[in-house]
Length: 181
Picture 1 (cartoon, rainbow, N blue to C red):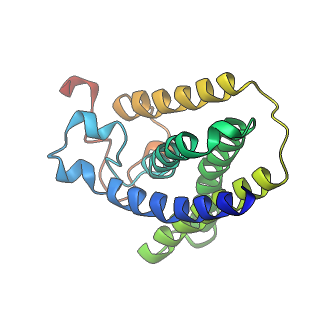
Picture 2: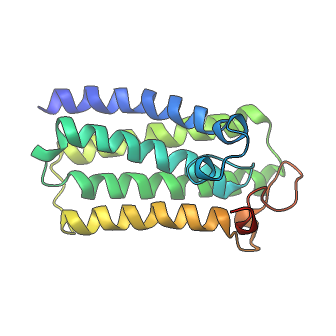
């Protein structure tokens, strides 16, 4: 079982990388569809790039759970930790690089995404293999992940005036506003 977990996690890295990369473009390809905006990047803000980490990880976690996660008592706790780590790591790396260098070339931004996913899957694999003891009931971990998904959707539609939500590609504000619904 432990070997198959590693195989699933490696596959997860590649799947989440592909899905996250696609989700960077799906909003534009959809003609700025409001439903697609809920899980895809609508601009170049840090917030929108956090969605590119969160949603692919959630989608793959659901797939994993279906095939082998039900057998792991700690599955959703590990996924909650991994996904939270990915979101926070994305923020920390971005602001560290932008604070140190001002702006970064596109290849650095893209690398941050892949490095974040690699760290998430590495840490999750270690936690699964060490049989990390759940701190929360599984239902609580799932509810917290669902709450994060709702938070991403709501704050995409109604973004606060904070740097985390600023489109760093030079646009002001989000192309998605609640008035469009």
